[in-house]
Image 1: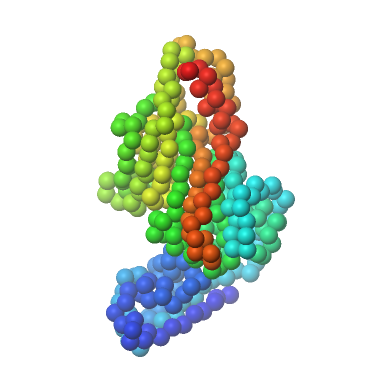
Image 2: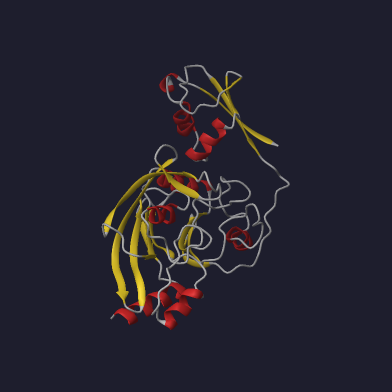
Amino acid sequence: MNKIKTFSVEEISNNYRLDKFLASKLDDITRTQIKKIIVSKNLSINNKIVSSPSKKVKIGDKISFSILENKNEYIKPEKIKIDIVYEDDDLIVLNKPSGIVVHPGAGNKNGTLVNGLVYHYKKNLSDLNGIYRPGIVHRIDKETSGLLVVAKNNFSHVKLANQFSEHNINRKYIALIWGVLRPLKGRIDTLISRSKKNRQLMSVSETSGKKAITNYKTLKVFANNEIPKISLVECILETGRTHQIRVHLSHKGNGLIGDKKYGKQKKKFKKINKKFDEILKNFNRQALHAKSLGFIHPSKNKKIEFESKLPQDFKKILDILEKLTN
């Protein structure tokens, strides 16, 4: 069935952009959702379909739009362990392990983080992102570990989503990469779009895509005659594009250790330490961890920040690198 909303444009909103007008009227829908509603041709002004978010509205315009709801869709609750870092009436901050997908999608209907959230919280999660993404404000990749915030209600979801849209969320990642970044500290500012060669991957583009900014700092370089050069890097996101850190570091020529899609695998190294080589062979994901997360609490209106320890598999590689190079 369709859920329909209608509005009339008052004098105070004359000549507003359509998306800005709707954002001023709706506190239970994110700006991203507003844009999707408009461009998907589910909105009309004076009974005429409009698909441009930038269209200017006029006094007396009658605006209506519909949100398609499918009551037959269903998420199977599953008893999946969730590592809670913080929780209150508005939100949950959790530590996602590598190897688990955040929400159901093509080929991943079960075994996701959302299946576990539905089991533990039932309907006590925001529903702004649809049936398959209850509570989900943002994502991290399946094989990336670390901190994620989940919204328990729509008010909190909108407040958090707006902070993400305005790039006011503090997100810090730790990564292990092949080689040494030049310069050791810097800012990667590019456009990122779908790869023309493989639509499942993202790539840096000079002409199209979304603006993506990653600030990075080399924390330590590991090198001797027993291992290839490897760097421990801290990345701070200004934007949050799909696979952003992985794409940016690969673009610099320094792919993540373990990244089968974007990482350049290590070259043959004649005298590589056997124990280190064995640990690498058993490391089955990219060496990327969402270490810290900070934002303004939706209802308390104060800054809160969280830190996450490195998971054991990541720490195991780091420990042996320290041991071999000290």
